Each structure stands twice: as C-alpha cells, then as structure tokens.
Length: 216
Image (cartoon, rainbow, N blue to C red; front, side, top):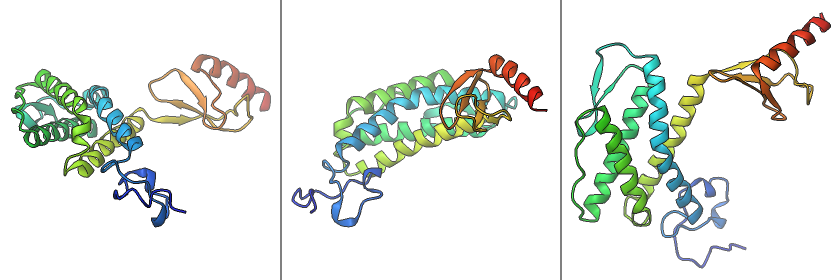
C-alpha cells in the first residue's frame, strides 16, 4: 500500500526517494520532504567552514601572483582544486542569495572588494538564506537550489578528504586482527576502517615495530 498516495504533492527530489519504487515515493512539503529540507539547511550552514578549510588547500598549492575574479568583485588565488571549489562556493551561494532577494523583492546584497570581503559576503549569504530557509524551500527554484547546496557541500567534503590523503598501514589491527589500519594525512591518528579502533601514530609506530620484528 502506498502511504503517500493521497497527499496530492509531487515526490521529494532528494535521496530519500532514490531507492524507492515509483509507487511508494515520499512526497515533498511542498517540494522537498522535511528530512531533506533539514539536510539542505545543514549543508548550507556547513559551507562557511568548508570554505575556510579550502583556503588551507589553496595555500599549499599557491603560485604567487595568479588571480581570478570571482563574484561581487572579490579575487581568489586560482591555483588548485581547493581554490576553484572555494570560488564555486562563494559564487553559487551568493547567486542563490541574489535569486531569493529578487523573488522576495528584498534589496540587493552589498558587494565585497577583496578576500576579506569575500568571506563576509559568504557568511552574509549563508545567514540570509538560512534565516529564510522555509521561504527558499517554497520557491519555483527550490529543486535546483537544494540540489546545488547539497552538491556543493558533498563535493567539498570529498575534495578535502582527498587532499588530506590516507596511508594504509602494514600491521594488522590489534583489536580485529584485520589489515585495515589507516593514517589520515596531516593527523596523528591511526584508525581501523573496519572496527574503528584508533590510537596515536607514536603508539602505533612502537607497537608495529615490535609486531613486525616478532613476525620476521
């Protein structure tokens, strides 16, 4: 039986319906279901921290003097996937702020002129969109808006994970005995990807040396 057949609303375009059969779709409210609306709101709020983290990626690859013009007159080093993604977060979020302001007949946002202004522009855009989340979820462009915000956050998380890198270690996990230990680049933590046991790198190094010597 389809529990959603009598709602009269189209199905939510989110991942909640990705694996469902056509006759049993979760309806939108009015476009996205409430769970997906919350996921979009969380992803939106996360963009400020993700943007800041991307600057760490960009600084590690920066080539002096190479610039690109971004939205609202700001400028960002265009030298790495991190810098490109940071610019995409800024450009896309500010564009959606502009779209919602136009839809609601609100005044245009202020224009930033440098990197500091870019950070303020992003924070302001996220704040504006977040405080009007219910309104944004009811607009004619709610589907595109939600998809873009979710994709921005997910894509940035993937990029940051790739930048940190992960090293697979040779000694087996002392808890589950599987060779599933990893060290994430830039951290002091060794973690088992199977049982989630973890320790510090120094402790692993001392233990692994003893283990490998005894196994030789």
